[in-house]
Image 1 (tube, rainbow, N blue to C red):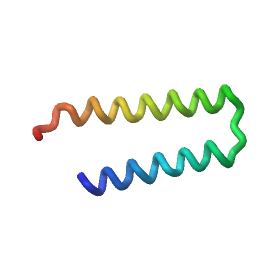
Image 2: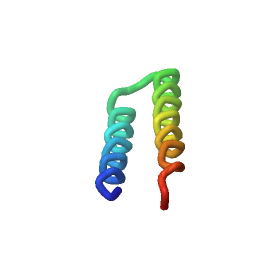
Image 3: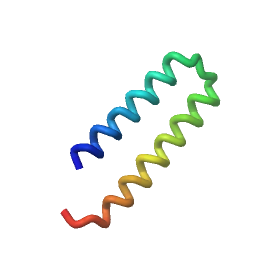
Image 4: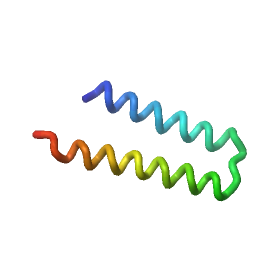
Length: 52
C-alpha cells in the first residue's frame, strides 16, 4: 500500500505541475479537475471493498 500511495502522490504532483505550466484554458482546467476527481473517486470506491 505505501507504494500505491507514492504513485498516487506523484501522479497528483505531475498533474498539478502540468496544469500550472501548460497555460490551460478555463475549460481545460475544469476538464482536468473532473477527470482527476473521477479517477480518485473510482480508486476510493475500489479500495472500499478491501478488508482493513
